[in-house]
Image (cartoon, rainbow, N blue to C red; front, side, top):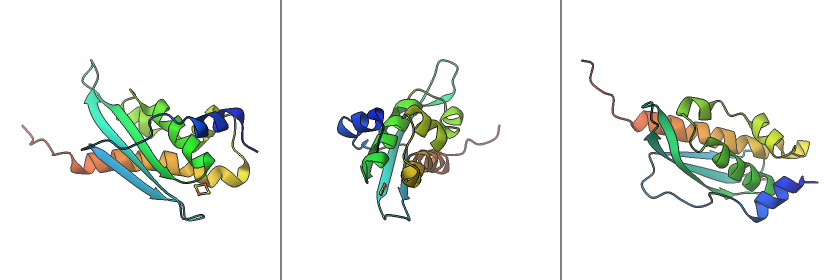
Length: 132
Ligand code: FES
């Protein structure tokens, strides 16, 4: 029922694991099945001085679709600015994966929501620069 790409990433996921001292962590749960996913990010700057996702990893305690979507979103987000990364939707992820079975779409929510949560966590922790 899964596409070839989903099975390939499920067997050989990219960016799996944890980042020590991450700049942001997103934790999301799937209310349907009770599975949980963590997304860890390190934020850096590109040559224009914009904030980018320098490194990103995930830990997913879920099904093949959840693991494949996590792997896919980490590859898609790496190197992007925070604004670009935030715009990645679950449909983008599913399209890159060659589609997901409809009953598994809720699993793919986790990856996009986890990434947004990690960016929100980073912004919340970031010290606010005093106005000049
Ligand atoms: Fe739990 Fe897919 S069944 S994440």
